[in-house]
Every structure is written in structure tokens, then in C-alpha cells.
Length: 328
Ligand code: ATP
Ligand code: MG
Image 1 (cartoon, protein in one colour):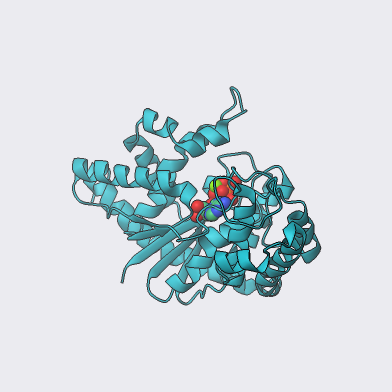
Image 2 (cartoon, helix red, strand yellow; image 1 turned 90 degrees about the horizontal axis):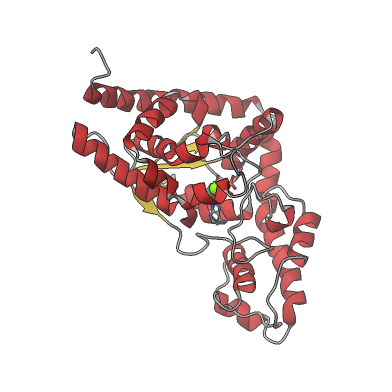
């Protein structure tokens, strides 16, 4: 059976972008693959986090993974910091990386922007840690959004570089991008990706937003200068993004949506879009509420950590042996 690995940061509450670009696709994969889904808290601390908020976001993310339909009997769901092999292999991967290639990463550039002299070193070390996450599990495929493509390419380079120095230890993983929804854009800026750590709350819809908030955010979402509901990514990025969200949440094609709102303007379109998004998130939010406070959630995470530690330690041992860092 082939193996899948994917991680999400508890750096905020998940957005509709995280759902449509990543999490939604995790559910059908569990039927076919050996899946590892990780709450990557060590990635989240590459920028400052409030301890109480981080703790809550870790639990929220765990409950959301299950609320969208992941079955703990089929997947391994765990918290990165509970599997120390990630940090250990992360260090080795950092030592395998070159400064120049890390500085070229667009996420590093975006997230260091405006921080002056105070760029956290962890932002630079993020991609080698991500490579470690993936390589620890003999991963075949990594389902992620488009923003992670560059990091995946680096992961492949690091795996190949390591293998050529020390022997064929790592499997070189492939990326799996969704056909549509791989890059959901901010509601306030059609040229910037939707992100859960965006300081502008109006830029994203959180998976836990209530119906009123969702409706308000969509009503205030940026549109383009004319009043036509028409898909044109270059000329009309904001409306095209809203149409993509509509399509993914309703199952209707972009052509159908365009025909439905011909001559009707943005008002009617936004009212219906809000309803479609609310109805997509409603069942997830209901299951989330039931799960959040249960001890079952802790049991699932403990069991996940146990299974992940077993697999990860096996790989770490092989790596350390190959490098001359194991006595046996
Ligand atoms: P942060 O702002 O803290 O980086 P994020 O919203 O980018 O948060 P991540 O935890 O970095 O979320 O990424 C989790 C997953 O969601 C990854 O697979 C990533 O590719 C995907 N993803 C993130 N943003 C989007 C988006 N706007 N559209 C589609 N997929 C996305
Ligand atoms: Mg991100």
C-alpha cells in the first residue's frame, strides 16, 4: 500500500482555503492509502505564538481533521512535537541544505517581509523540517496546496542529495495538487493567497466562522470593477476566486454558475454564495462541537503518536546508521 503524508500548522483556525486545497482531499485518500496526517506545531512556532492560543489551536485542528471525516481506524493522526524524530531528522535535513536554496524559498521571503532584523531563524529552517516530516514515513505522495510546491521540490532535492551521499535511504516523494482549489485567494485581495495567519480577518473565512460572520465577510469581499459574474483569472481575479469557491462548495461547474447569474450582478451571487459556504461548513462544525471536549480525541492523538513514533524511529535509525551516528 502506498503512503501519504500531509501536515497543517495550528497557526490559527483553518480557513476555507485549507479545507478546499488540502483537508477535503484527505478524506477519500484514506480508503486507498496508508495515511499520516500531522498537526505540525513545530512549524507553527517558526513565528511567535501565544501559548494558550497555540494549545487551543492544536486541539481545534485535531477535532477538525476528524470532523471532516477522517477515520482514526484508517489514518494515523498525530502531533509533530510528540514524535521527536521529526526534530532530529529536521536537524539532519538542515545540515543537508544550502543557505542559498533556503533563502530562495518564496514562503521564507513572504513571511520575513517587514520583520527587519528580527527574522526568526526557524522561518529559514522550515523547509528542511518539512522534508524530514515527509521523508520519515517512506512517503509516496504529499497532498498539499500549490503554495507548498516549491517546498516539495526542495524535499525531493534533499532526499536525492542525501541518497547520493549515504545510499538509497529515502523514497523520493511526489506532490499531489488538487485540480481546482489548489490556491484559494484572499477575499480582500484576489492576488494574495488566503491564509489563516492573515492579520486581516476579512481576508479569510475560517472553518469555524458562524453563518453571520461568513455572510458579512462574503458581502464585503472584493469584487472587480464591472458587475459581471464571469470567470477570468487575469482580468477578474477576485470574482473568479469567489466563483471557484462557489463551484467547489456546490458541485456546480463554473459555466453553470456564470449562466445562473447572467445579468444579475454581484448582490444575488454573493447572497447565494454565502448560503452555499454556510451549508458546506455546517455539518463539519456540528461534528467538531461534539468532538472538541471528548477524551476520545486525546486517545486518538495518543494512539497516533504511538504509531507515528514506531515508524519514524525505524527510519531515523536507518539514517543515523548510514551517517555513522549509531553505535549499533
Ligand atoms: P499560515 O498562514 O500560518 O502559513 P496557511 O493557511 O498557509 O497558514 P498551512 O498550515 O501553511 O496553512 O498549510 C496547510 C495546507 O493548506 C497546505 O497543504 C497548504 O498548501 C494548504 N493551503 C494553504 N493555503 C491555501 C490556499 N489559500 N488555497 C489552497 N490551499 C491552501
Ligand atoms: Mg502556509
